[in-house]
Amino acid sequence: MSFGWLPTFVEMPPSRNKMRARIQRIVGRLLMLAAVCLLGGLLSASLVLFSPGYGVDERELDPRLNQASVEAIRNSHRLNSGLPSYYGHYLAGVLRGDFGSSQWLERPISSLIKERFPVTAKSVLFGVSLAWLVALAISFAGVFFRGLYFDISTTLLSGVFIALPAAVIAIFCVYLRAPVFVAIAVATFPKLFRYLRNLLNHAYSQPYILAARARGISPTRILLHHVFPLTSPALFALLGVSLAVAFGSAIPIEALCDSPGVGQLAWQAALNRDLPLIMNLTLLVMLITVAANMLANIAHERAL
Amino acid sequence: MNARGLRVISAVVLCAIFAVGLFAGTVSPYPYAKQFRERPNAAPSSTHLLGTDSLGRDLFARLIYGTRVSLLLAPAAALVAALLAGILGGFAGLVGGWCEKSILAATDLSMALPLLFVLLALRALLPLDLSPVLSVISTFTLLGLLGWPSSLRVVLAATKGLRNSDFLLLARATGCSRWRMIVNHLLPNLRPVLFAQFWISIPVFVLAEATLSMLGLGVIEPLPSWGNLLRGLEDISAVSANPWRLAPLVLLILVVICFQMILPAKEETA
Image 1 (cartoon, each protein chain N blue to C red):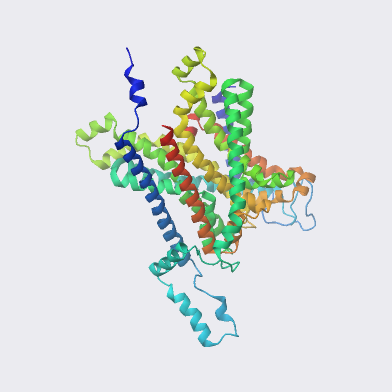
Image 2 (image 1 turned 45 degrees about the vertical axis):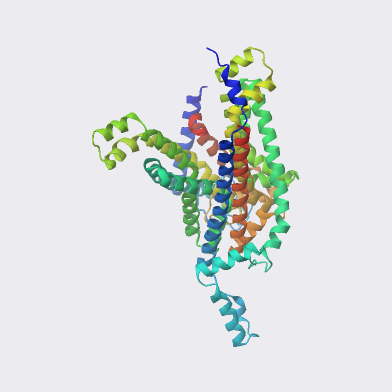
């Protein structure tokens, strides 16, 4: 049977319809991101507004203030008393880059995020990169140098790491004076490694890849032309998941390693019941992970 | 030793640890909050098998009671999460259309959020001076209510597979009512999937509780849990001098590894 028509079909330039469909998908995803922003903002605003103790201002107890000042403070709270009004004010503020003020630190949340976010972003990026490097290296070593002892030792290693709470990893990192990104990598690695190993084992056991190996095709060519197209959807999805895992583990790690990032700020905000701050931080992390997933999906479509 | 043998050993170890947690009152030599004020930071001895903490409380007793809290409430939270995933995933898979799309979008959104951030945000809504019992209930309830998204995708995929199956088509063709189809045909076939998701969630919740309690936002003292027992590791110099303080960590690792061993590889990758 001849498949002579297949290369011609594959090499055809994308038609106008295909381009339109791709643009539609990207616009759809951007709209989805906007909807997530609005929905997340509404949820955060509702949680802050209906939390116990919201609207109670300690300044009202200050004996130096006269009745008119106390009334002015009370009126400023009443202005935003309903959810639509509160949410409207919140959205208008966000559009101006004003996320409100931290109740605990009494500082603008935007300036706190500006200070702290680069620290976490750096740790998470380095940590995720290191985790991917190590997980890929061990998974490929497992595929090419398959052996019982190697399998048992790597399974045991990842099993022990996966059983360690991120906070315990942070304590060991403090003890060993390791940087924060190493702790994030250790927390992210086992989850990545298990999926990567299973994915690669599955891919390399496919009959057509076995046939390609038997015909002496180079490992690089097999990887790029046969394994990557097969595993790319899962790999791109895993990229987004690994970012979410890394951000999640950043809270205990930064809190215990005393790293001045967003994770530590979220922990301190939770301890001090600073709801506006913690809700804005949660919203920020949600947006980053949703955007990362979206980019991963777009990159995956381009790769196909 | 083959995989089946390892699974049997893991199950036996887990059953033994569960039994110790369940009968903590009988197994433990002392109540978890009893102080021996004359013996703070004592080394292991015949009276205190794992020594005492800085407040003079018996660490072995606290470990056993902590096992009860962590290991009996994590399955309860996992049950809540599996039930939520089953109801929502089953409903979305059966009905399809915009209902499936909206539930899937909500799931994707929840999965994009790091669990710990949401837990921290919701825990911050509650007062910090909760009673210890309420802190346990709120921690595990939050875990149960937030842990369903990853299970839902698996249940949804399984339900969609079943929806298009021949036996359901036949049941529909013979005039079987929707309720009867769900109870007699769908649920028995979804049971293995739900059971696997339930097992997968337990170690995840045990670890999440440990992290929250280590950060001071989970189970509150004097009630012990593995998380607040692990707070003892923060003083690393005391741990290197008294290595038996690693006992809660060793137990935690053992339990999580046993759970992983019990799960077949197929469910793990699902």
